[in-house]
Figure (cartoon, rainbow, N blue to C red):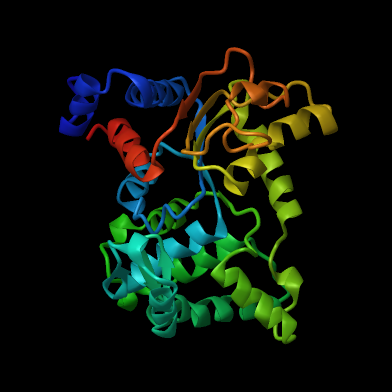
Length: 325
């Protein structure tokens, strides 16, 4: 405990049972993974970027405590939305009391609500649309093709957005990832605001769809990355929420074993999921980790943790522990 700060010491002293104890166990096991030379993937579903997870995740990236990220298209873009439009966001703490008419009023004023937080269309989404379009069009004109995250890296690293920053750039996890050139897997990117932008330009014929690399190419990329980075140890898997952000990347291991018949590839070496999804009929997000053994994703002795709680509370605490805060 000597190298831990006040938040970590509080967690160790008070989080002794139930989900709290699992939080501590998962954090310690994550730390052990890094100490033993394993690399770590973090996956993000939900609206973690709008929840400003970048305040801790960006530092995790800078300190090399995560080596690859898988996230939804929403999390990819919403970190940049927050970076350039934070002062224009509208918080609605009484969101549970909103009537359909209240929701219509938000729409009429171009606010897109995410629980208690409204993202302003003009200042956030439209503010980066032209920058992305220019990057897409340049690639299209030159016969180049990139993954969704690479286009975001291009506009961030070019410096063209700097005059729009409305938060400390150190709190942007995507900017931290761009500076590290961290690989980001974004399955189902089409299901995002910027994915819709891109599709609209393809429909009008301004850009060819092939200018954006596909989900199959993402799986191929991940398969190569995993083989190069797992070595004989395996890679850890830290899952925030459920959905495609977790489902897509975890399948790479059984694919390598069962479909490519590469028996020397180690399984995922650690698994932790933060989720409030309950186990029910056919619910993958609510499934206990042992079910993953039957699919060839985890071993019998893989450290496995499920923290049934709110990821916006739990993830920053675990990151704080790992950062020694």
